[in-house]
Image (tube, rainbow, N blue to C red):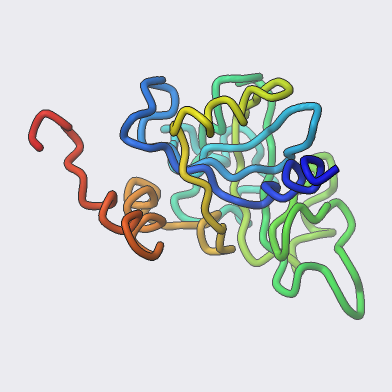
Length: 194
């Protein structure tokens, strides 16, 4: 059935909140989908830095976390749990394959097992971001939101994970798209100004 391939193809893509999305949790959010199948979807919001320094919660990982070196709010679910998303140049393919404690999600992007001693993966990581919580959707829920026009689905780039200016990520991701999507990047923050 062609529906199955369609479902799995969104893993590793970005969900970019459209101006129509009403949920304040996701206002101008850029979400990296880490998992998307018939059982639901899971992702992390890439552009919600918190004031919490990585050093204060996961000291061993602080040196590997890119600028800004803070924990990001990955979404409204399980805020007390931490997720590590890291880029491994080359996607862990070739000679040494994937480093211990890193699981490929899409291309060079993958999840880091934060229980792994950081020194075992440090040399392989190109960029690391620590997230508190995640965004989750039940079966069919994300598809419903897509059908309602709440999200644009675009390709991710490894640099999105470690953007040093996360507050500009929404505009930057849209700006690199072709056609009408690039125009959306120019929307004012307050739609009443249109």
